[in-house]
Image (tube, rainbow, N blue to C red):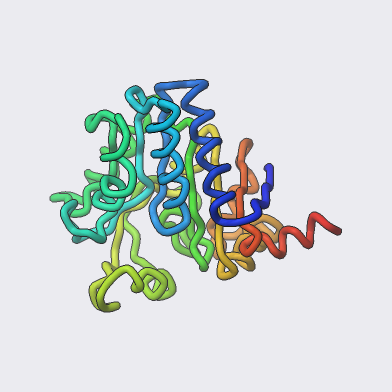
Length: 247
């Protein structure tokens, strides 16, 4: 596991973009696992800049998003379909047929989950999985006490996650209570993992995930067992990690 502490959110975003760009330069048809939320937003903006100014090519890339709220159509501004298209996909030259995001309104949730995992397998597996981390330690929408052996599945969101995501909605009542998420087993099968964290609110949980025991109460802690993980945080999120490095 490599732990990198960037000087700022902007520096973290630039470094994260370089890692993703490097993956594409080495393997243009890479399968990328992508995350949403506020943390990777700067990375997407930087990748767009590199695409426009340097010619970073996404034509052969394939992407799989970690999760999607259940009950939101792709046109809803809070859906992750909308987030990805608005913040990233429409600004680069990725092929629409190479974009995979769990359906927010599937006719059969279990069938959608099985289909999603099957598509990942048929595309050869994820080469680089980008992750954020929730204040409760979740990765994707794998909440505390989730089974580590879970593949893509329906998730009931914790109150802590609902409260954290309420800032994106007009009222907390509008926040969906369920989602489809890649499971821990699906995430752990990625060949490489890039875990991002920013802000003081992530400082304690990122420390627990990396330096305390592996436990379902902190789902991200399972990454201690992955063979190729890069943890990239800004100074605010890395204050406790910095202390460990100094010691």
